[in-house]
Amino acid sequence: MKNIISWILRLVAAIILLQTLFFKFTGAPESIYIFEQVGMEPWGRYGSGVVELIASVLLLWPRTVGLGALMGIGVISGAIFFHLTSLGIEVQGDGGLLFYLAVIVLLCCAILLKMYWGQLKQLLLSFR
Image (cartoon, rainbow, N blue to C red; front, side, top):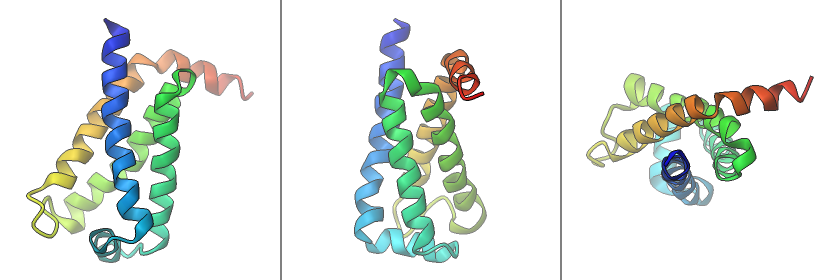
């Protein structure tokens, strides 16, 4: 059962993170607007997209789920921070969809980090 829950959480987080990449990397007007509002266009858009891509791959590779979850928490915390401080919950009439998707990713990654904490510790210790 733990394995099924893990895969559901991993897939949900990875799919949400990966689907935003198209908009970030193609320069969709919505993405440009968001990153202009927080003063990070274009480098923030590309940089966060690269980190989201790496986090997604790590989430889907069983040996690195913990690291992917940690990276996912890091990158999505930035998104949530900007929603709460400068963008607002609703951005360009999206009804808060981007914010709520970010919260879902944060929750999935937080649960996965708890589940794979031991794996993350082992991975980090292997770099010593």
